Amino acid sequence: MASADLKDELTCSICLNLYTDPVTLHCGHNFCRECIENVLDTQKGSAAYTCPQCRAEFPERPVLQRNTTLGNIAGHVLSQEEQEEIFCTYCVHTPVVASKTCLWCEASLCDLHLTVHSKSLQHVLIQPTKSFRNSKCSRHKTVLMYYCTEDAECLCVSCCLGDKHRGHQVELLNEASNQKKTKLRTLQDRIIKEKDDTEKRIHDLQDHLRQIPEKAAGIVKRVAVKFKEIRMKVDNLENHVLNEISKQQEQVSLSVSDLIQQLESKKDNLSREISSIEDLCQMSDPFLYIQADRRDFTDVIEDGDQNLKETVAADLAEDLIINTLISGMMDIMSGLQKGYYVQEASGILLDVDTACNDVHISDDLKTASYSKTYLGRLENPERFEYGRVLGSKGFSGIRLYWDVEGSTEGEWRVGMTYQSIERKGEYSRIGNNNKSWGLRGRQNEYSMRHDGNEIKLSFKPSSYKVRIYLDYTAGLLSFYELGNSMKHLYTLSTTFTEALYPVIHVCDKAWMRVLN
Image: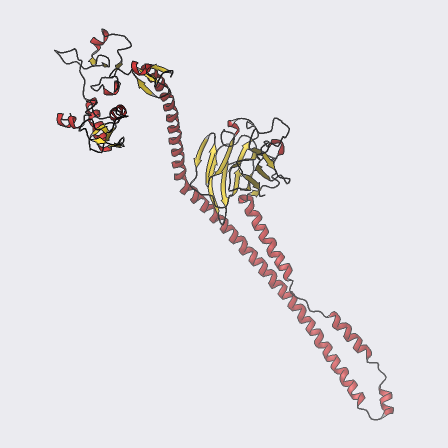
């Protein structure tokens, strides 16, 4: 319980209640904001404004400075008082705990006295309290029984009849309170659901976080096995290529050696022929020379020329060796791709028949851009109401990726959707329903949307080039940003039940282009 001296220091000298939103004048005195404003209003047109307590004068209306510390202390004292047990005003012989307080009577009542209490609307019953200042009009000092819905103020009867609230919609305070409580409970239910969804999301993420080391260890193990297989296959390929080189070396060496041997023999024959010719040329007796020179040596020259043309040395077939190496490496990569390779989706084109009339599609069917001009395309059941366009074909049961580039201006969304998505209304936006998953880019930030829920990402856009990766069978849809390095943005996990189509949404100067 606060002491009497402390309560005196916390009491407004105008309303004689504990301060409510206390403010300070230049002279240092404190008042409730509403109390002093009412006093200053009455002093309009006077020669000067004066402090109600010390009569200090101010040539102009003083600026009211909020006294936060004093307000906090008064609020604390008031809360302490309200927590104290309140007894029935009429049970004078034996204290009985009160169950209600009547604002009109300014009395607290136990259950017994409550049964005989007036049921008139003037007698407003509230939870037991000792403080009536918040329940009575500060101007007319009468009970606040009504509520102005337009000004959001509690009113007494006199306030309802005044000029300020004349013609406004006014309700009984209890009815207005019950209506607000109903709305508040509805909001509370939504908040509780949001809290439950958030807790579930946290739980899922915690489970995912705990699974990451195990998944990473599994991937490391599988990659190590693959590397071991690759090394073994590369070693085998290396041995095969080296053996091929050795084999060719041996064959070529034998061939060249044999050719050298043939040429050595020919060289010896030619040397003998040269000696014979030399001997003939040295004969001095013409008669003897003529008798001896009966052989034609031109056939030796012709045979020699022909033999030189045919004796081309064999060489190593390096192109065959390289082809063997490349063929072997391709076989290794082909085996690796069967387990890990993700195909780039080819031929992704935008379907004009689904494009909204504010989305311009380029001639090559790869760029969607926002158009301020209504394009006037013919209506059909597949056409979106605004901002969106589907890809021309869907995908299921496979793994693939496709790349897009978005504008730095405006807002865009990109992702995958079932063809059965709604085509009109707010629910048809990418990520606003349970049939589409999308990455949203706007105002230099990324966020993920699905089923009306939005998750802001900590990554800031750098290149505005995005890769969408789909593993349909595993139920994974991942988004990456493509820049100097590829950054993982987010992965959604679910079970897909229909074929997935690429989808793009552009608005407010935005554009997106398919890069595949």
